[in-house]
Amino acid sequence: MDEPTDAELVARARAVCDRAYAPYSGYDVGAALLTSDGAVFAGCNVEMVTFTNTIHAESAALGAAVAAGHRSFETVAVSSGARDGVTPCGLCRQTLAELCDDDLRVLCDTGDGTEEWTLGELLPGAMSGNEVDRAG
Image (cartoon, rainbow, N blue to C red):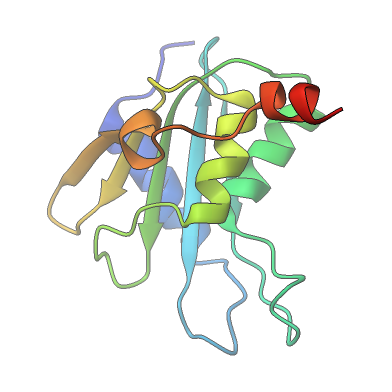
């Protein structure tokens, strides 16, 4: 199986974005996460009226990948219904940092292309298990 291109990964994020459940914000988001061995896992946001129970697209994709046994990741593509270049929110950045390296590529769909970041650029000095070890 050939590894998907960046455009194919963004297309997967767009496709799952169309399945989002966002009745309160109206802001649909989809994410497609590429594992190191070429598998792709997608997720979309699922809003809850309490908002604190809302599932974010990036977390949904990461959870699906982990549930399938993956622990090594290369790229995440993120798209919103607005195609506005949305980046992962702070919560999702920290969630990704738990299992992804600083050099994880983050592709943000602008509608007519992508903006590219690394996770380390988006979340410098991410909290890690080292902080928990030091606190214990």
